[in-house]
Image (cartoon, rainbow, N blue to C red):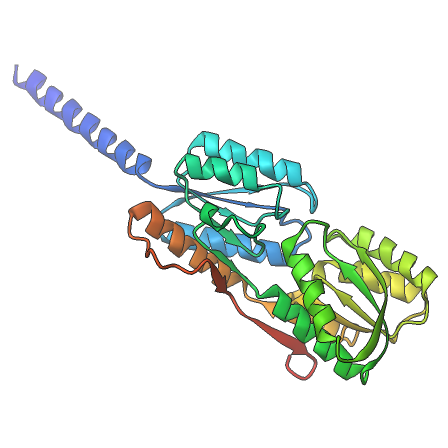
Length: 309
């Protein structure tokens, strides 16, 4: 009889411990990060690493979903819908298109899932769909880049622009800022096409623009991820003296600056984006979110050149 009682107690304790452990695991909030891709994109990978590290440190379960391609907007929308259906506790989102994600963000709001945007934002007037947007002041980054290029070229010359992907708020703001930065100079934009954040596309459009206007002295690109393709096109055309300004401040970009292939890159701070995004989401999940969180938090930027490396 004593053996039966003892065995019963052991089973009871074991089941209780298992149940408590399962409950603790179940109580662990799940935070998902949706972005375009981390393949051949060091900056996006840096944000993903920062978000994951911060989420794990905060005691959350982390899930990463990538659209797979730089322009796979519909894939991102579908993946976010899946995350909502799954019932994740919070979403960090780097929207690939400023308009396409709005309907799915409305679904997240209806489901009570808090969202923080990083790196790129959405169309104005929809600020109620997210806690905050954390990212580079892209317009200012482009503007400083434009001013820098104008200074390097002594205020005159022909320039090309390799944009990001159509519909990308970050790419559009950088180019708009660049144009503002050269507005008071005599720099002339003689070509402007989207490189879709991809080297093969960037090389193709650069070649096309060079065929139409070979007399160029400067070039602005919306991201370091397109530099290899751009440099290949310039080299094939015998244009090795073109001054280039980019955006990202990636390790690859800094190597190109060091080697004299690129004049400068506007550095961003992905660690700030990831850390702050998780901080806000965990506050929202725990019910301690400050009601006065600003809708935009500048993660900072600085111009890297050979002089500041």
